[in-house]
Length: 128
Image (tube, rainbow, N blue to C red; front, side, top):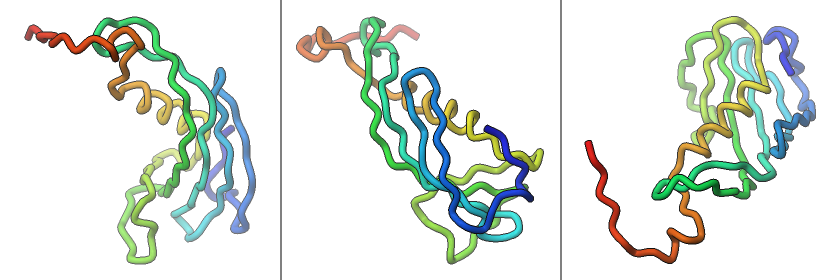
């Protein structure tokens, strides 16, 4: 779902998109001429790799996320939400599919252990 930044509504507007088995839902609205807020929730399951052995691990996602979307370079304002993730866009298009994909990849980049490795206390030496 792509929306041109200037067409974002001032009132909260609900949205819901899916990618594989992850649901991205919430609301968005424009708060200034070049800043919008997105309050959303990520729900579902996602496959990633065990960081020790490389086997597939299915993780459950249930996260609340807040974004500030800046049309251009972001300049901090004292009224801005301190907990929000800032996304700067350059092409004046808010791409919710890209935001969802980015959040999924961010979650997958964390360290997860499969059930076998959780029980195995053996130290793994990393070669450089």
